[in-house]
Length: 373
Image 1: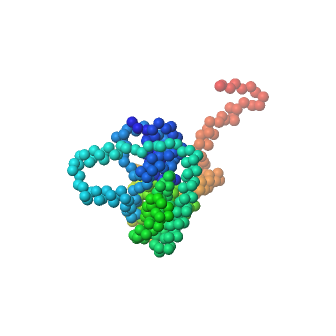
Image 2: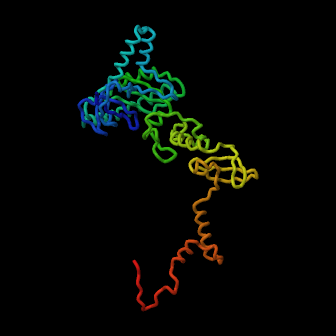
Image 3: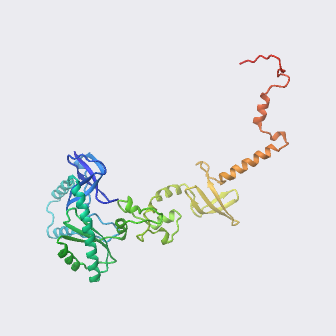
């Protein structure tokens, strides 16, 4: 058994598993952990839990996350080295290779220590260092005439490596730029090209709903979004209304898609002929949330009806709003009050009158009467 703790390095970023060791950690604690690129500063997102070593699955590292499908693939030095090794050396024994991979799967980086006041000061110095690096790099991007959009710079905790994030329409030859950066900062330099959705996640912003972008607030991994989701939810297909700040389809289109599909499964299809109180008509619009359908009859009239909640009764009933029902009930009560026909009187009132005693049976004023309790 091993005590595993979940560490998050960025707000709304992915949670990575680390070996907590003998440390007693709580959610929100700042810690220094060991990574492939050196020490890293993060916060506890998932409290420590004991887990079997065989249940630990391999995961992407914080420094080299797996790129999204929509983005261009990012080749790192490790990937290039792996490709070269695979071309030069063929595996001799597949079983031994699988055993090696399985042993590597169970290895977790350890929590180095809990963060101190000096570590927080180092983090602030790193923030200033990243600003200077961003400004310096932007100047030489303009000087070299490179068609790339630099939007973020990340640094390891010990400032031993700088990662420059940028977007571009195609491939960019930044070899000369890397030489200038290495000469200036005397540290390892990585240029990472990412997709526009990753740019929106890292930069943040306010969506058209008036709230913080979902990708920057809580989404850890992007899901596939298609125009079909907007169609199934009867949304406008205007690109300006269903696109986010990144220019792609909004991630929130996936939130209610499954609910709409489940509700539509029990509703008639568009174009289906249905029987209504006004005659036969064709379904032209669906409202799954309210369980209503809009039907156009043969004479061209459009009427909205509510589907019956009884599964055995598949017929449709005319929809009446609660205000209209209350108005009809009040009108009926007024008609009953002014009606002269004794047959239309309320039967409950008749039954109550029958229970009252006759006038002759009532005792006169001043006489004693025996009441049976």
